[in-house]
Length: 192
Image (cartoon, rainbow, N blue to C red; front, side, top):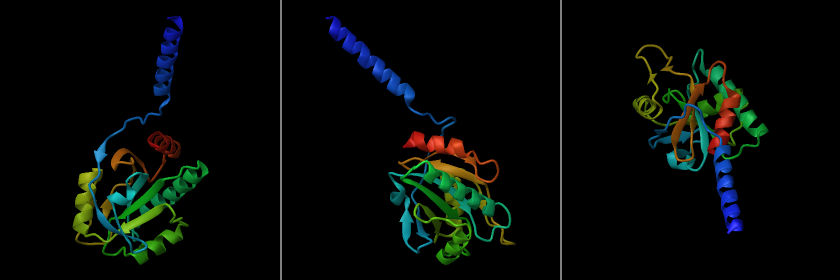
């Protein structure tokens, strides 16, 4: 009788300690992302199904942005390098253009190359209408995207979005200033 009790005690203790060791994401949300149909910088089609099974980090940018997009893209390059340093595979970076009429695949490729983007795990998206990206950003990402009738500067926020393998946003971070790289890496590890 005693060996059985001891075995049961060790089993329960092991399960308890294993559950305690799982990393948690602080202030986690669970916003499901709706499907999309877009064109990559390589002029290939892409949708949500192409990202299923991968953890990904997303941002909204545009190539003629006069202020926040260049630093955001540079910060994503830093994140990409940190992912490689941590040997985190199966993590994608996705940049949605908020000015799809201007940002053709060729324009996005030229823009990304200026920052030294490694395209092996980073995709830039366009190929949808302005109306689509404005509605999609509001519904799936809980953020504003608005292109004014006058001028070429699109209004958008500067968040990075962490998305799990099932296509749910789990957390948002500053993508412009004081990017919390260690927190993002921690949270990515928690999702893998």
